[in-house]
Image 1 (tube, one colour):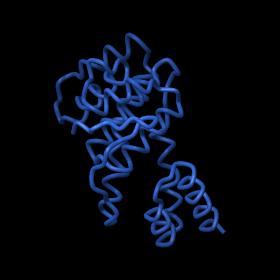
Image 2: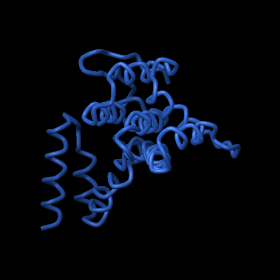
Image 3: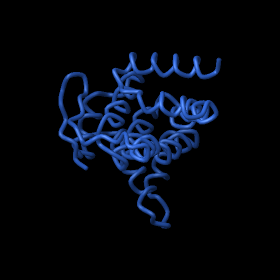
Length: 178
C-alpha cells in the first residue's frame, strides 16, 4: 500500500514539473522505507523562511544544486523559485553568474557558496541575510545551502546523473556559469 502511494506521488511530481522520476521509482521498488525517506527530504529543502526572503532561499538552493550538477535538478530549482514568485530576471542573472545583477538571489548564491567552501571563517553573507530578513531567512538559506546538493549527488550514486544543460527561466535560456 505504501509503495503504491509513493509511486503515485512520484508520478504526480514528475508530470507537474516535467521531470524524470525513474530514480524515485527505483528507490521505492528497492525499499518502501527508503522511498518514504526520499519523500520526506523536501521538508528540509523546501523550508523557505519569510516571503520577503524567497530570493535568498532560491539563490542558496540554486548554488547548492549547481555545486552538485547543472542538469535537471538545477532546472527544477528554477521552476520551484518561479512558482514562489522569485524574480525571473534575478534568477537568470544568477544562473549566468551575474550575481551583482541578481539582487537577493545573488545574495543567496554567495551565502551558499561561502557555506559550501569548507572555510571556517564567518560567512560574511549570513550577517547581511540576518540583518535584512531575520533569523528565519538565515535558517532557510542554510537548509537550502546544505540540501540542494543532495539530489544530484544521490542520483549520480544510483547511476542516474545527467550532463549539464541550459537552464530555462520562463522560456529564456541561460548559459550556466559553473
